[in-house]
Length: 591
Image (cartoon, rainbow, N blue to C red; front, side, top):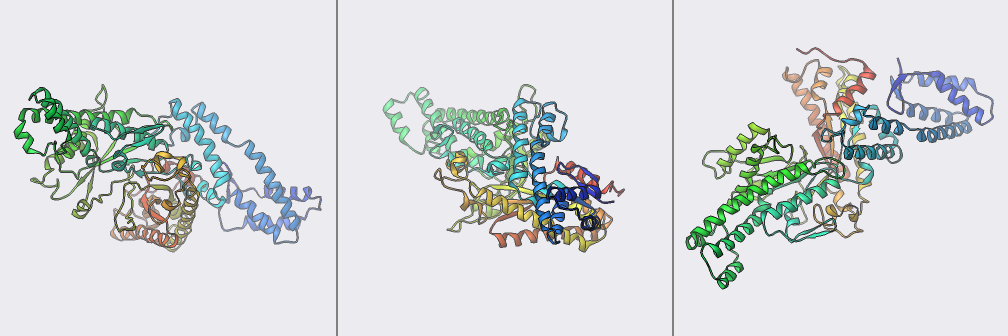
């Protein structure tokens, strides 16, 4: 039985009489005798089209094309005018009002639970959701090409974060935190001077995270946090040492003035330890305490922050490669803080997500310089899930090119500057489009060739949406998000400069995601890929094929395409509901 997807997403039985009535209305509007023979022919052709389910917009497009190919071209124009008028009326009574009502009375779980990181009971989140309803509606109906809108509404693809795309926001990023801390930076209306202690540096980082997260919609990662804080821990040590030498060793002011000018007052200087052992011990103890408090403050402040979109910033920190005393302190107290619990009830903190780099010769084996830190990491993991472990190579450590994930799981691909240097900090992702793989398998059960043919079509839609997004973002002027494009988080541009040079050439990435490979193997090949080697190989070939297409897209477009497994807490439900309405219950017993 043929069915139709209405504009608001509901699926209804195909009604040929509605098509005939609409065409007849066009004849009446043009004051011409109704050509019933032509109307019946058009209705019959649409009724016998191959697709079992059609979007209402597809049906109307078919009517216009068939009228234009007949002798009734004037009626085609009248029909299109009638269609446009109905659209304008419909838009005024759009379901946007219904969605707002459902948000206010908390009756629509899809709206309330769309983002797992937001508490939809709070006013700030509801205000953000309200803004999202209107901006999503406008982007879908006024900005996005119609074929992409239809593909999204049909559940063939999912265009992520539609409620933010209107405002030319970017997705995830690796904040160039080390450069921002050097010499200070502008945050809002304040010019932040370079920090003179680790606690002030961490305060700057928290403010940067809050500002960056308020101007983007994805995850915010601080790479190499341990390395970034080393200069400021050294400053703290020197500050404590100068204070200690005045009161412990009773050094005169003239000598203190000379010590302040020295650049080697740091923990690694064993000469000053021999000359002033008590002061050195005091400075060491106080510095350790400063780092401890700074890491506690980092966790507390991030989890108590609320950005302009009403949620705690999705923050990731990357640590693990530093073997200096200062860097090891950061690693140690990041883990100790997490294991100690958060707040009065000592609950496990959600953020920041911790990513710990591991390498043989660094911290993987007993006797490695950071072996003891790795033990802290493993203990922390058993108590609080994190850290995630990132295995890195000797070359990555040597070249300082460890790639920490942006936000939850997206990694930047390699990009080199004109002088051949790899760069990761300061780069970003522009958004994601996900493929409903099980839907393709359902439509082509047992037909592998048909599956790949349909997959090609869907991949082209994802490519088209990615190109549209890139062209939309390239017009962004730096002054639209100063913290990102002017203050150094991602670039240092002039206010009227655009980010076009960062959008193309692979500096930024744009993601095509996939969901449901396991279900695909069951539907297409009859078994889960975990149960049969042949099915595993065939399923893996699907993933390999998508990877090859992504590489092809990169070369064709000069755009940094990336393939990833979609984090799909809410998307699973959306795709399942759409597919179940169209195809019925496709569950299989694979026990």
